[in-house]
Length: 253
Image 1 (tube, helix red, strand yellow):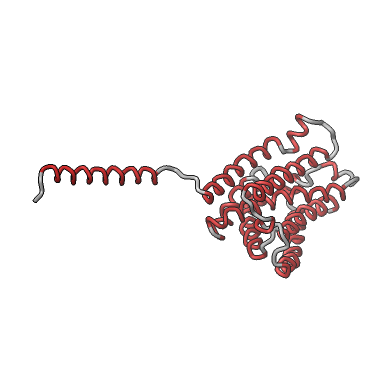
Image 2 (cartoon, rainbow, N blue to C red; image 1 turned 180 degrees about the horizontal axis):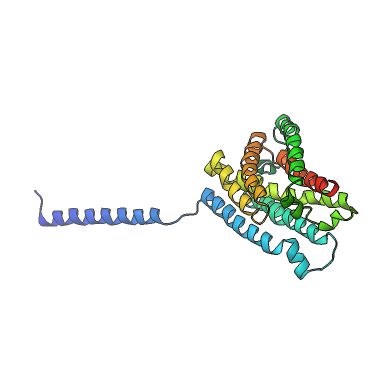
């Protein structure tokens, strides 16, 4: 037979259960930074910081206005090197030292060699054709080459185009390596391709409108190719080739 005391004990125990349940719910409602979530958080945070720093302090204009007013291509070399360091070297260090990823985990290995060669052989003729057609567009002629003095004389052009490769190594390492592979395990293939395409496109704002729209297509296609090949190198070669051949066609056209 229940007594008043036993009823009180039951009520107290029920209150305790409810309080503990509510407390547990409150704990689960609190933001948590488990390892996968922290990785995503840090990748997206560094993306915001890196692209802002690169835009304002890694540009050729920043070099010309704050470091040197030299008329040579040094300001462009500074721009290319900024891309290589801010978008390339630092993300590699974050991935390998911070996230304990291997270089192959972010697409910096050879990958599937046969597919890499296949996409280079298929992609380069298309790239050369696009570069030639773009070189006839007045908007591209007004934008490229980035070092305008090459339109009058081609001294050190080869050195310039080789160093230009540093820019594309940084670019592809960042978007198709650090972002794409870093986000892929959490978001999957399709979403990670779309996510890295957004900032890649926005970084083209200010370029000819055709180039901005083309960057959306390139972001999707390059992302897909990198995941198929497990390597950024075929898209690096194609992207660099586009920049090189566009300059050559404009300068000598």
